Image: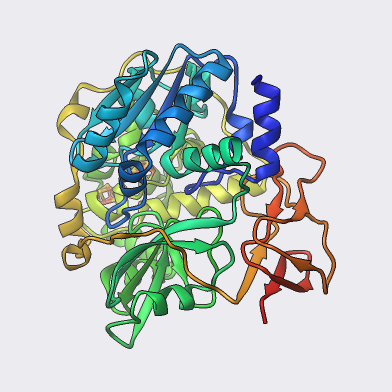
Length: 442
Ligand code: SF4
Ligand code: SF4
């Protein structure tokens, strides 16, 4: 197979990054890469998708990594996986010995080792330039579920219709469930035995970077977790805090200790992001333009806010708002030269997962969430036309059409980065808007 053929298969099967920003997988394929990394860091606490999929589907996933490596003409692939995921590590070790172009790289149990820029450095010792992406240093990164979807598309001719989601927190039966895309979160919670307390709030994604959600929200191709927490939990209070209050608190309580900067994972790689100086510029008359513009090099990992700041301030949230203001004004991050080296102190300033879990007050929720691979039955799905970075798909069905699981319901728009969409259940199209397609089996 050549690279153009593989790109075509992935675009038409609707394969996108299964988690994170949802970068279309076909668009990552690039002949300039010499290393392909499998991301099994899964560094957000409580999420348990990738390690379990890799333990079960190691043969398919390793074989697909080797195939991608050959198609793009890269030298090798590397599996970046935490030592603690022993079952998956053993499964990979068993499979990878048959591949001359593959190696395993064991990662420490620290946060945020799954950030692609950080993973690239840990696995290859190459420093991605600020404002750049891994391909700038010859690296492509795919996570485990994405590679499983690539296997399904290439080897089995299956389109992306389902997503694996960890449901954790205040539910009777925490699980990692295979679920049709477009399923309501309330259906997921019912499947997991229902809630254990009544006054709850939801987070879609991990406790560090996930955003607040409701039970009416639906699973998309990037939903990797739904966390159910008591409404008064620290993580919910943090997300409920008004921006004006965050600014006032910063003005009155930021003592300029710079712990946020000292612990910032991107700063430790030599990138020019400095949350401590940002807080000073934001809250005083001494605005430093460079510091403000450099917010564009923040990854939004949340370390400065959720772990580092002794005053409980919100640098990551405020930086996020500042960054989106820059974006709205069409100010884009300039790609800088890669740093010469990471900072030496990085070796002893990484955040152990066990301490992070204690700090976030989620020890009681850190329990197994076993894989349920049979898939939830769902009678109604709402499939959003935009499920990844890039142009939304264009519906190719009409209201009243009968569709089966895997049938195409929207074409990629004739523009870069758009992906096809497929029905995730057997049913009838009941509504089409400019945002979504509704399918019902009743
Ligand atoms: S969120 Fe905070 S710690 Fe993370 S990269 Fe941005 S400034 Fe650094
Ligand atoms: S860690 Fe908190 S108090 Fe210290 S400089 Fe950063 S924002 Fe200010």
